[in-house]
Length: 412
Ligand code: ADP
Ligand code: ASP
Ligand code: MG
Image (cartoon, rainbow, N blue to C red; front, side):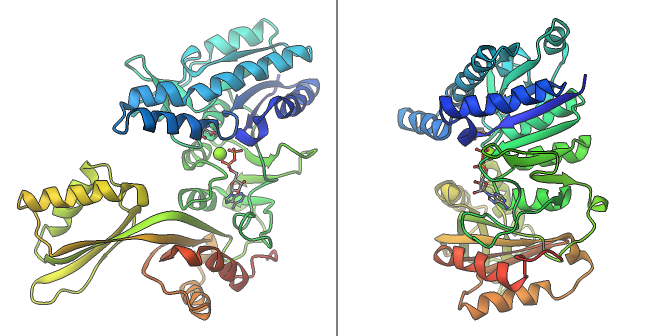
């Protein structure tokens, strides 16, 4: 029997009525002759509430207990989804991650899935069960502790199950009807894409578009999972939503296909660092050890043997970065005049495979921002993306201006 994976995000299971709505979609697929693995998120807002409780209880929390608490939201929706299906006469049962077991690394709060043994679930399908409901976002470490996969991790649970069970497709049901040229919440001219290439989706996700977790796109690309994003609030057919697919399967392609943003960035500058071989290692080594996710890096030209070094990181890691730099200074590993933190910046990125073969994207981007009087603080580029740091208060304006400048409202 063909097997389908259907994932429902937080807003799609936000209350009992919505769980019922989702269950009706599942039932329809069962009636069409599919076996279904359903992955559920916690009810919307629940995971944030749980994270808040952990932080209030223990600011320097034990990550193993964080995972024990924060994974619990999915347990509730998995059980409720299974009960709802049973009430509709659909044979269903629920599994928490450890029961499958979804085997992960022991990197608590950002664990990776290593393996999903099929035996337990296959046995139930063989007995006539039609729907396996899985609590998303969670797994089991080699030490036997509960782990979680990072925020948005149920997307990754879904793709990993689709790969493990050779699903015909992995459908990600959410509160928008597909992947757009940019977040439709901040640009109402954003256009829904019928298809997007894996590589572009991977960049957009890692640059802030939260519609899919980055790791889920990586897995889909690696295991050739047919991945689709669609709305849980509409009636869908096989053409609905956005298909994430190989580049070769897309006929028409704009040079730039999407714009992503990251709101909560910080720009840190070490003023007057001694410029000598090994200085970058002496700065970025301790930052990495302190768990600071450094993103962009710029080193200024040096004058009289001293230079300024700028880097960006998420705003909630600024305190950690400051401590790591102060400690390195105290140890005598680096010396600098001052560490200046600008905590009011955002990152805007334009992404498109077409950039490989088209020049002029960068200058068009910089022109469009200049016309709005937006100052660019840091720039980085790679083969298919350009990112800039700007003042956070211009973030929405910048996204809209770039969306216009690259004509994303209209298909190629
Ligand atoms: P879920 O709870 O279903 O996992 P998320 O909130 O994680 O849903 O992701 C869906 C949201 O992603 C949308 O509501 C939208 O605001 C946001 N988003 C950001 N960028 C995009 C984009 N390019 N296309 C579609 N949605 C996007
Ligand atoms: N509930 C988890 C979160 O909010 C996982 C998910 O919804 O994908 O991050
Ligand atoms: Mg999500």
